[in-house]
Each structure stands twice: as structure tokens, then as C-alpha cells.
Amino acid sequence: MITNSQALSGVFGVASGVAAAVAAYFWWRSSRVEIPAILHGSSSIGGNTYVVTEPLASAARESGRLNSIAASWSAIAAVAAAISSVAGIVSNL
Image (cartoon, rainbow, N blue to C red; front, side):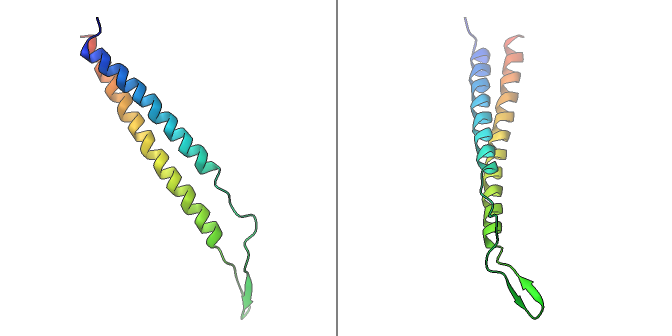
């Protein structure tokens, strides 16, 4: 017969795996953000060269946003794994 602690350990073990997979997906998406190869709109004014960097900044913001989501899911996975481990230990007492 499965005890409540064993069931809890199993549920949180599965939850940990799912959360880790979601984190991996968002990190994969973050690595696929397209970085512009060429920055357009450069101009020289008074001997200084100015480049429009908004496309690059936008790509960096999107990558950062996706990394943040991935890190959150990774934290959820770690907490779920810890709960699973503690419940597994309790079930063996």
C-alpha cells in the first residue's frame, strides 16, 4: 500500500521533472532569439558616428525576459525536488 508520503514524493517528483522541462524549453527559446546581423541607421554628426541600436537592445530584452521565465521554472523544479526528497525520507521512517 502506498502511504501519503510516498504519493506526495511521487507527485512532487513528477512536478519537478515537468518544471525542469519547461525551464529547458524557455532557455532553448532564449538561445533562439534572433540578433540583428547589421545595425542600420548609422550616421556621422560632427565627427561622431551614431548607430541605431534598438534592434539589438530589443533582442537582448527578449532574451532576458525568456531567461527570467526559465530561471523561475528552474526554481520551481528545485523546490518540488526538495519536497519530493523530504517526503521520500518521511515515508521511510
